[in-house]
Image (cartoon, rainbow, N blue to C red; front, side, top):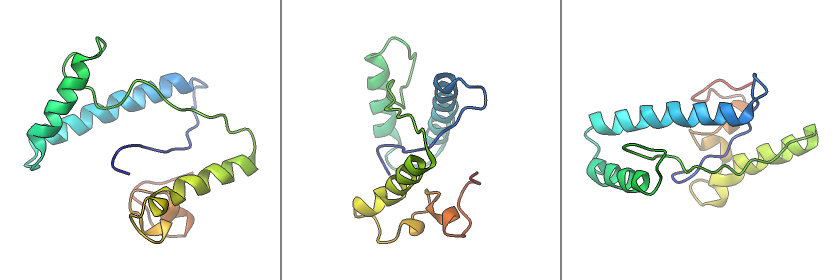
Amino acid sequence: MSNHLLALVKSSTNNLSGTLRDFKSFTSKKIIEEIESSRESRREWMLKLFKEAAFEHQRNSVYQFWTHENHAKLVYSNKLMGQKLEYIHQNPVRAGILNEAEDYVYSSARNCAGEQGLINTL
């Protein structure tokens, strides 16, 4: 999805807040670096938006890529995990991006369908 990320996440350190913080910090730095060094046609526009967002929050010095809040939900059973995973996989289908969840390259639906996704999943 172009404006949000849905994920099932487990922290190996039992510190989910810290894990999400570190994920957001690492990915935002890498994404900003890529935008700054690319020939992306929307480069200046995107950097301007991220700079304006950082101006609104004192925690950021230059750019803000992610919002500060998370909408975490506790997954306490395998049944609920399956429901959440199905919701995540169907999100781009519901958005009208494609017809089959496993066709979305940025989804673990590919892995669940026995195909190779962009990243390995558990």
